[in-house]
Image 1 (spheres, one colour):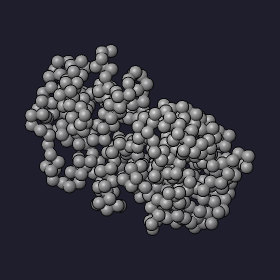
Image 2 (cartoon, rainbow, N blue to C red):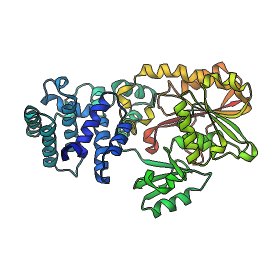
Image 3 (cartoon, helix red, strand yellow):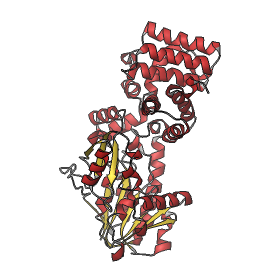
Image 4 (tube, rainbow, N blue to C red):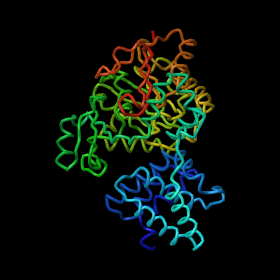
Length: 447
């Protein structure tokens, strides 16, 4: 393959064309990084371009539109090549425009035929000559917000209705910032100070999380390549996600059900609080055998496998399997639309609809209803999602409580007293609050 065919820019364009066709961005990137020997600088450029073009797609399409008469007739890779050129030109200050244009034209020349090279050259020079269209030309204010922040209009309207105009705009503006690299310390093995020392010795720049008492933020370096990762001293987990398990207040001798457990991040966090000698165990469910194996693999890496029973089972069959009043604590980290993860999975914004949330609401409620009888009296059932819409959050809890008078809502605790002055007993973390993922946590106590 030519040098152009191995370049970070070409690999980004290739990945973007596949992602537009339904592939997942994170899986595509991992595959390309594993298949090609690239230095750290090229990996960073590849990652930045793929996520950047997806994040800003509606903006980039708006800029491109006046210069391409029939965009749908273009080969997908040519279309993505032009968007990636626009992204580099407008968002990557350290790359000169001349370098962006030259590289883009070179890729068109090597990958296409002379006609494609001439077309791409003409579009780039025309954009440079005429300038890009301004957002102020968009009359409809919601459409203007949609193009400016590259967010679907339905999500803008729904967030405004639920949170107010100011909070909505602050939230969507924050979603195009890069996601933090956050770790959760494995307290079964070590503590924050111990992991900080090891990572610092390996050349990483890290700091303690302000959100989670067991969290670490990596400012510089790749934690996934360290010996501390290999030996299970930490796992990669967002700060908001780390708040869910502490809300359960797991005791060393508890029998805990993790109803929707794969890939096992929260399972291993529960397990770190258990003592196998006192009978502590977490039963971790998933309906797919490969995912059950993944839970087991993660438990082994984190050195807590002796406390984890990874089980292939639909959570909605829990009562038939375990009987009534079996568990001390239950976690339902429910399947959801994932709209709180837009920073990490930018394509979610274009794939989801309000109807998806309403459909998921039924699934979420059915899981809560199915596992509720297996909780002992006085036990806590924590319900969490990584989404930011009330349809999957507050409305699910409200509907569950209406049908289950034997349960009551108690205030979700956090060690760092997050949003301590809130009036809601549930905890909603929005992506702009701490620049972590959006998350919802509710604690339901069986009377």
